[in-house]
Length: 118
Image: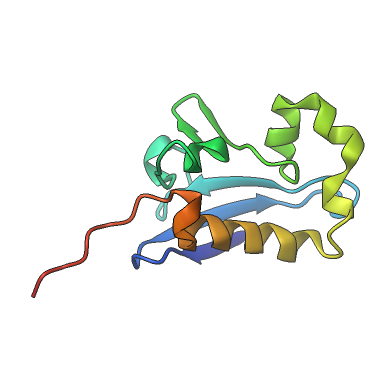
């Protein structure tokens, strides 16, 4: 499934969500390119050190480091037993709300485009 996410600065990102075994397993999110749906570093949002606690845009190691993302759990095996994605009520809504916060809450460290001067 593909979801378009919008950041506070007007940029948008295409998030691919792999939902196999929805509810039993955590979702797997990846940012992908518009045209070919390739998961490459250029498709991932950027931010400061706070933002990079969750979004890992390093080529060759692209993943979302969160206890409700399958790749994050893969990097932090101790998160699996917590099954945080099962405690949210609706894993998809929880995932999308987390992404909205990352891209729109200044405290999360997203790198915003400068405002245009007219």
